[in-house]
Length: 336
Image: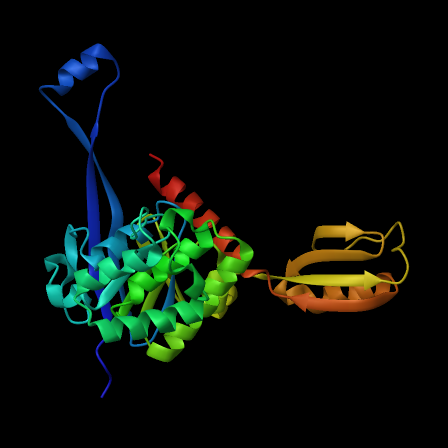
């Protein structure tokens, strides 16, 4: 018998109403008696489910509705309509049983006290969650070892580097052993090495504990290394739910061919497809998938090829194009 989803949403919708103020003094005066409002659907009939142990990427441009959905799943926002279930609980009711079983980590928000050493800040979280001393010591010991911050526990939070602080935030989020983890831009602003360390930790933690994880990130390397499945959202609506490989297959009709030559190409040589990069001894072109054999033949015939490779369009470029086309479709649909 199949297990019930750990996270499930059905037509989850959030509408924000904002006051539209008219310009000028007369506009302000009229606003005292008659106000006009604009309704914005930050989440529009969002439906998806996530099973036990899944690590899912939740992608979209700024303002797409990602954080709004995470906040509704965390109980921080009440939905306008639709329903959500996390571990069998309705997050909108903010039950205590659910609060002890999930964590929300936002890369641009701080959960630790800046004027306390990291260890004491974590101690406060221990008291808030009512975690036993022995369990606290074991959990913090394991997490600080995995994140390589054992020697930073006595340092004031405000004196930690951004990468070190994010690692401590991860420890604070995970010290009560949540079954569900919501990550909103956890690597934002981190240097390359800190991003790598955080990704390695999240991968290993998910493998060990099978915690359900929903991740939003603008760094495609986060998604490629951590998520087998992605959900794409734009203007509050989900338009794709599947694997990264499916994204490439569904939304790209081209491939990239790179060729290196032992001698410069003839001056009259006309390369196939769209030239992305070109130098005297190399060329990089993008061609329709169906024309790859013909393009390879043209390159082999046109010069003295010493290396030839056919590649998929980089996933970050695919995602950029997908959201670009979605933005254009939305603009056209909104035209009178």
